[in-house]
Length: 151
Image (cartoon, rainbow, N blue to C red; front, side, top):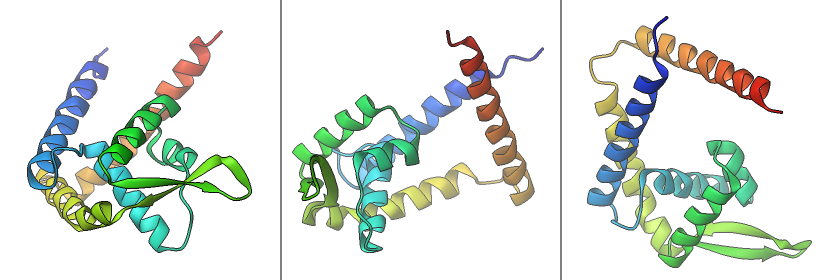
């Protein structure tokens, strides 16, 4: 049996490092790839008139609560986002981009688009569709294996 989990992990780490380097160099050293993706999601969603909460980011990016908390704190300290209490529930904080975050949004979006184009260079649309389908199935298989291993 082929062991591809490690190759997938190496690939994921390389993609994350490359995207971090791209955004850090072209937009702001205070942003990483994931923070840039989250900023983009916050901007797009609030422009559509919908509120964004931490749990939305956890679900959208499939990231643990503690990881999202750490990223949001860093983004808030750097001035990219603001957290605002919600009237109905003081424990709930709505996330919005600040002027600094909005100013960086277009650059982040362009950087991510250019990175994706570079990443997909020389790969046919059919191969990309097959890859996406295969990765989704593998992700589901990994989830089932994790659930089966849980006590």
